[in-house]
Amino acid sequence: MKRTHLLLSALLLAFAASSRAGETELQALALSHQHAALETMARERLARDPLDDAALWYWGLDAAGERGLRVELLARTQDCVHGKPQSARCQNLWGVLIASRLMEEIDLTALQASARSANTSRTR
Image 1 (cartoon, rainbow, N blue to C red):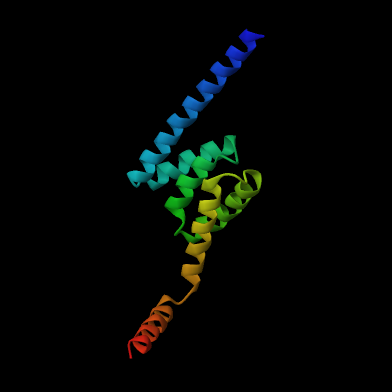
Image 2 (spheres, helix red, strand yellow):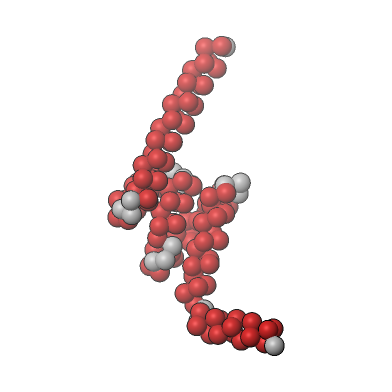
């Protein structure tokens, strides 16, 4: 019985270590702005595990401003939110992607003018 527990523990530790190693690679690609390599690695990881929140999060944050990818990322993130409801990364990315989409749709110039107008009227 103890051998089984030890074997399972060893397997879990090996999996966790390889997972963290891959996560470090994703982070390095994101920080060095290697967008194509980051997307490739994220897609490979997501092909193995569609709910890989680390791959989705790093790729999603990197590509949130790209309209073409955002549609795919929103769908994947929605699946992640439903499949891993406790994942802060999935929740965070969902908010980032929605905000990115809204910012694209809102006329920020009009919004800024409205804010300036409100501030001017308060100071009078």
